[in-house]
View 1: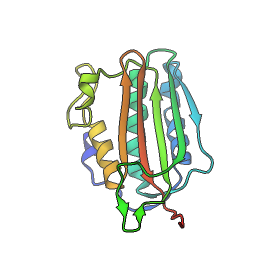
View 2: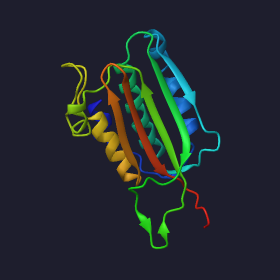
View 3: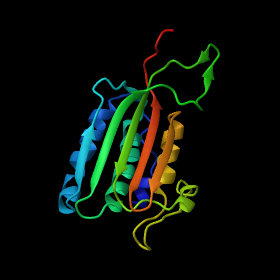
View 4: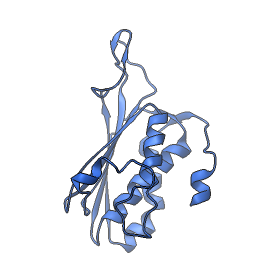
Length: 180
């Protein structure tokens, strides 16, 4: 794990189909979800625009988020992975011509697990900060996830309630431009 996080990432950028990437990740995690009796519900927007970036880094990002959701769920938990086309976030950069009209790809990884106490939410993206029990987490997964999103000019946010679960939402600009 240490080698994986310190190794230089594949920086080849290409057009990435997030629906396909997420589908592949859920197949990869199937043995773990089956053994824990966790149900994965996929609600994919078939018209989701492609995003431009490093497929390997996107895999790392979403593997982190889904793996955290698995860890947060108890037996018979449910994880929902939702994709949809969204407009630019209200806090995104504006172009010289006004607000950006580029569609964004939105991915939400939502679980019905233990949730994160509100007091901890401000720190969860800090390196080496973890809410997991000793020996069960390094505290670098979400910091790396945020770095990946930032390097692709995107945004990541979280909503969580104790004993209700968490929802991590990633917004990434698409590769297509929409004419005004």
